Length: 443
Ligand code: LGS
Image 1 (tube, rainbow, N blue to C red):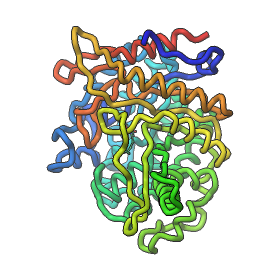
Image 2 (image 1 turned 90 degrees about the horizontal axis):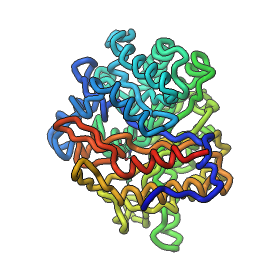
Image 3 (image 1 turned 90 degrees about the vertical axis):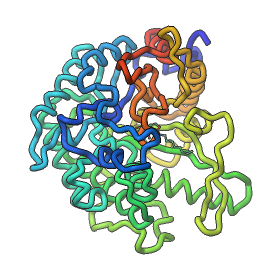
């Protein structure tokens, strides 16, 4: 394909629509000796947790290459860059600001601003300081208050440099993957942990929103949630009900409290010991108004009823990406229109969308036509949602560059820029070149 195409007159072809690229601190920074240990350092050091036994000690060495990386971002012509902050780099064990950590990010923010690139900053993209985990992590209610203190300190240090703050990235992943099934850090396993940690994460979000409103009222402040839309395998009533349960458990659980001030009704069907500890006033704190909602989308999931576990997820059909997730762009449009009809949404940003593909670097080029197809289809899926009336203001490709893909280590590549981890050379892939062309073609 010569170019990403969108229908003539699409809002996504106007300069009002924000295009960006996204990364996260632990996945790209390295520079491990300049920060406190976090739960992902510990998890990576645990036998059998990371597919290639790797860790985030060096990653893309962004800690040293940040300035060139911003030049690279600038060369793509994007309007915005979504990055996350490393809490263990910014806050010392006694709770005070680590000045060197603050300087690292201030330099980044200043260079972005100088280039006219808007910083979209996520305060928590999963790298919890290990000493906080040692105190119970997200199972301890106090962590929510610690997060609000961290938010207070960094927002004061950064002043008005940040265009948009997101409190959390994907609390589903932190709570369910990290504390219920244990495939992410800190690797705890137990149904009694999932909902409790989720509640403390959402409380952390609400408390941090209060701080953001006070300290940086002119920034656009909100949260980033991930959605894996749930489809029933058949028209059978039992399968449909099971799928509905899965949707409430995995998706609605994290958004409904924010916009409707309550958890999905399935909370009453969970055993008492699996339910969160909700204190008086918590739901009001969680349901602060947000300036934007960040939506991350990659794929859908198909379910059928299961007598023991309520629902069972089926093997994803073809076509699939290199990580095994089905490519099904229609679910993206449906998700966005569904959210729009269920909730009274603020402006929406697509804060992540992208695909892992088995890239080959040949003659200093990566001809990733499979990823190009993915972006082409998903950009159009977003356009369809806009046409259907959803207020979507921007789109961020995940990711700027290949990086540490959590439990998959460095084996799965999501970048629109290829990273050679031996030489730390960056090469813009075909998908990235076309992204640049799309962005530059706007009027
Ligand atoms: O790198 C992460 C990307 C890659 O895929 C990023 O740090 C996260 O914010 C985000 O979770 N990311 C991601 N998520 C895809 C989740 C899809 C799960 C589908 C499983 C059903 C088959």
